[in-house]
Image 1 (cartoon, rainbow, N blue to C red):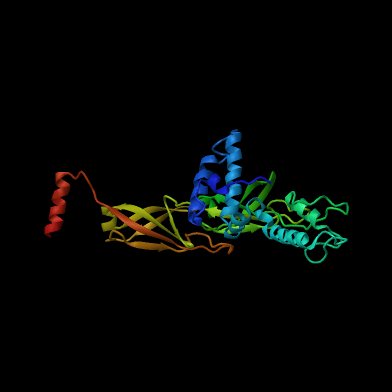
Image 2 (cartoon, rainbow, N blue to C red; image 1 turned 180 degrees about the vertical axis):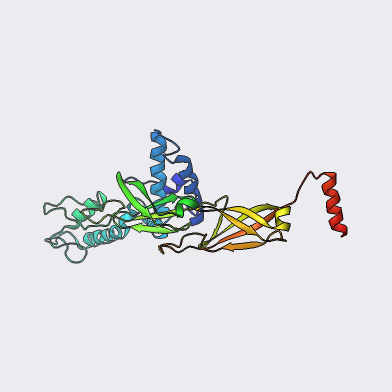
Length: 303
C-alpha cells in the first residue's frame, strides 16, 4: 500500500487541531461535492480523497495510529507484533522446524506468510504450508450530512453511496447539529474475510434565517406596527408547520416575548412531543408622517 499524506490532502499541518481538520474538510467538501461538480471526474476523485483523509484524521485514535504506522495504520498493532516476531525469529535462528502457534498465529501458520500477506513483504520467503492470516475488521467510514432546519424537523429517508453500494437510512425528526449515528457493517470491507467496518454519519445543520434553535425550543421575531402595539390586534407568525394568527395585546412593548406552546422543534425519538416557539415582538415606528399625524402625536405628548 502506497503512503498517502492525508494532511497534505486536507491542506493542514501535522500539528493541526481537530477543529482545524474539521474546518478544512468542510471547506473542501463544499467545494468538491459531486452535486456542485456534475460529470467532473477529477472533482469526484478529490472528493473521495478528502473523505478518506477526514475519516482517518478526524478520529483521534485513527490519527494516532496513522501518525505512528503510516500506510499500515489500519493494522498497526499487528504490524508492530509482526516486527517483534520477525526480530525474535532472526535472533533465535531459523531452525524452528515449524511455524509459530498460539494466540497470535494459528497452529502451523508460518510467520512469514502472515507478514507477507498482511504487509506485502518482510524479508522472508513464501512458505509452502499455506498463507492463512488473521481476520481484521474493515475501516470505519465517517461522513457528514448537511440538513436544513426544516429537514431536521421531519422524519425522512436519504440514500448514500458508500463504497459503491447504496445505503438508505431513515433520519428521525429532531436530530441536532453535530449529532452522530452509527450504521454497523456499512463501512469498508473487512480484511481476509473479517467483518466490515461501521459507517458514522455526523449531521451538519447550519443556522436558519428565520428560527434560532435552543434544544427543542425555537425563537423567532415578528414585526408589528406602532398602531397594533398600542391598540392591539392580530399578527401572522410563521412556524415550522405553517403560519398561525397571534393576538397582540394592547400597549405591547417592543421586545416583549410570548410563548406558543408545542410549536417548537420535535423531540428526538419521542413521537408527538414538541418544544415551544418563543416569539419576540419588534415594534416598527412609522415614517414619512404627514403634518396632521405629527400634530396628533404632539397632542398625545402634551396630554
